[in-house]
Amino acid sequence: MSLLALREVSKRFGGVNALSGVSFAVEPGEILGIIGPNGAGKTTLLNCISGVARLDAGDISWKEQSIKDVAPYRRAHLGIGRTFQIVRPFPSMTVRENTAMGVLFGRPHSRLQPAAAMKAADEVLELVGLVEKREYPVLRLTVPDRKRLELARALAMRPQLLLLDEVMAGLNHVEVEQALSMVRRIRENGVTIVLIEHVMKVIIGVCSRAIVLNFGRTLAEGPPEEVLKDRRVIEAYLGERYAKDHESPPRPGEGHDGP
Amino acid sequence: MIAREQRLPRWVRRAVIAVAALGLLYVILGPLTSLDPAQQAGLPLLTDKLWFRIATTVAMFVVMAAGWNIIGGLTGYASFGNIAFFGLGAYAVGVLVSNQRWPFVAALIAAPIIAGLFGLLMGVALLRLRGHYFAVATLGVGVAVGEVVNNVPSLGASTGLFLPIVRSDLLFFYLMLGAALLAVIVTWVILRSRFGYGLLAIRENEEAAAVIGVNTTFYKVAAFCLAAALTGLAGGIFAQWNSFVNQENVFPISANVQMILMAVIGGTGTVLGPVAGAVVLELIIQTLAGGGTNAVYSQIGLGLLLMGCVIFIPRGVIDFFGGRSRLSLGYLRQTLRETSA
Image (cartoon, rainbow over all chains, first blue to last red; front, side, top):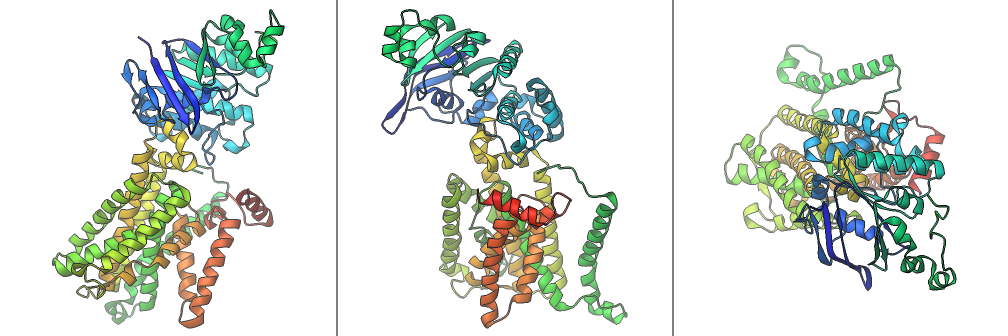
């Protein structure tokens, strides 16, 4: 049984087809990578899954049940957690309070009262490496730390499916390595992950499968190494001419230094 | 903003608590000394009758400002129509007491319920709007409800409703004070509960709140209902205190602005901010008030005060208590930078 399944999902913004007929399934325990050039519809896809955006056509199901018309907060209760590419912390709260919000409102069976939620938040902050900064106001955090906090808040919800929108963008090599081992640890705890990433090292490093989006359509799907060698994928990223000129091209994208 | 550590030395905290306790004791017991029996017994006259009117009015505005704070301060939805709840509460008591011959106590229980139910309807319809749209829509409803009530014959139309006079300054003072305490306690409880954290999350980022599992629609409507019920309670007490209800005195748009002003000056989103704001501002208004040009000047003064507060002390005067910040040039420069971003 798939955890999540999308069937012919379409979303338009005015005259722009952000997504046209995207279908795929997410199996329990996998890490699925979603890549594609800017404007390919990756974030729109996550918005549709988390319920922030409504579908124009198609269907999304969670454990075989359609969640197309389910409100975002109900999807959170079902076990879908997400981060935002442009982080959205609650600015007047401390790091700890922000994280505790995930515990307070996430999965119903793990709900706690505020005081207990603060303690539970500490465990999550330990995992993402923010525990020393738990009393900081959010505005004092650096950008990488804010991304960690975004992840901590989503993890605190105890999700079954975690949607990560470019959590590793802007991190240096060491930080990416740390983040990768963190993602693996989260998966080992039984959380299924769908991640959007531009850093190819991440896709090859942790994903068991990758989907390439271009202009709102699925361009390729399969094991990351194969997908990244696909001629159509290289064309989409680097242009037709580049693909023609290079018979055996290097890996596209920022992380051309390989895994 | 919640549960931030206190940095004041312990003796200062103790002194502040002692002074506050004494002040509260005086506010509660002082009025008793103005009773005729107390005077005859030779007790000192601590309080005069005018003081009652002012203190009762202050308490009334504490309720309204604290009510506004729940929706405007905690949830971040600046309502400009809360006066509709006050008016509905007042009219509920007016109609039930003068037309239906209900006892005042029963009518007073009905007032917040009726106002709360109207808050529910209004919330479901309007809380999907944000920012200016919500402000303007609520203002429209606030004005419209007054106009409608003013034209319904069974509600006394433009003549208004007369209630049997109850001569007891003391009773209304204690009722208003009780309502004010209730409003403060409700805010305090909310801020320490899961519900309160949900409201703050909505204020800070509604979409993020929804995806972590906050039922935003329910929370917003519930906050609006609570604000409406508290404001309606104040209106209900006012109706009997004033023993006369008409559009002009229970649907004044100026009071609508005043309650917002009080919450903003005192400090939105806090427990005691609206109280501080209501006390300070109402005392200023009572001092400046009067006929003719004085009234005009006081209106201009209030406008300038609001501008100054929004720009320079966006967190309200309450920010200077509890040791979080100190009023200094550096503070003003800092807030100016924050507010002009």
